[in-house]
Image 1: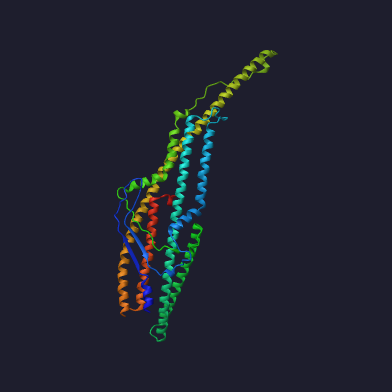
Image 2: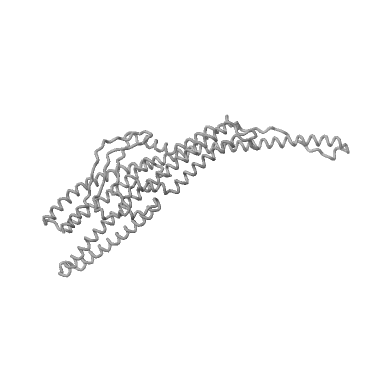
Length: 435
């Protein structure tokens, strides 16, 4: 019996705080944050995890997910092809066309070149954003598996304890020390625990399947890291300024494109003032019946009429073309104003969301601090409980219950840290949430 108790003690939670100086985050464009690190580790029996192929670390998982990502591979191809497209389009700008016999103007060439450069940079940025999102998704999936494994292990031990209690209750019922209702209550509690364990096993299976899709690895053949990293994040200074810088970095290429088009679409450089229609009278067609057989006079007048009509139609076409150009220009110019307004509104919405995330982050940090203190106290209580049990002052059932409470706190702490880390990533890298 004492050997079994020693195994249970091995599940006590160890909390170690690595010493380190706090480095506050200033409201600059770098947005760096480092501070005290807390490593949360549960000491467990090595046989409890499958280790067919050794330990599969979180860093291993991230590398495999990146290598396995079809989306990132496609982005790499897009970037490569976009560079080729840009080279060809640059040559096309110099070639004459039906609408531009002399080729595009210098202003148009500059606009097109700058637009291509910004679009290529934005494409590379989007590729990096996708990688950040994949890393976050993989990290969460990895930690979810570890947490689900711990929940199942805890549920199994709780079932063992409750089953032992059920056997004791049956014996007491036979001795008429408890009622049949008490026995049925214990049986229903066990059934409920079995249902919970089954649900957790299904959730773990789903998480493992999703993880295999992400990384291409069957995680059941590996042991996983039991540590979960926790770095506190503080904005020292203006929260508004820090968030503004984060958002600016996220949307900088959208803003550059809008500014580029806004600078280009102006009346002076485009020479698209409001067109004025020349008051050219409509020529009168000659009346053939009025010439009384003077065919030479009729032919001369008709020839003159034809020339005037051609001039009239030509000027009308020029005017219509000017109207069309003016209309296209105004639509493009309005588009830049709309784009600028929409971008500013998007920034406001993002900032509101990030402020909420930061508030949630601070609340979650308080919860982590409370759980950490609770764990430290529980470990002391658990140590005292073992001593009392060894001295026969505490029943095995009571001791086992305290061990389970200790494990439950560990699971709560891990889940809370996972939530904290997700919030922190969403604040520092808003594209994880918004894109």
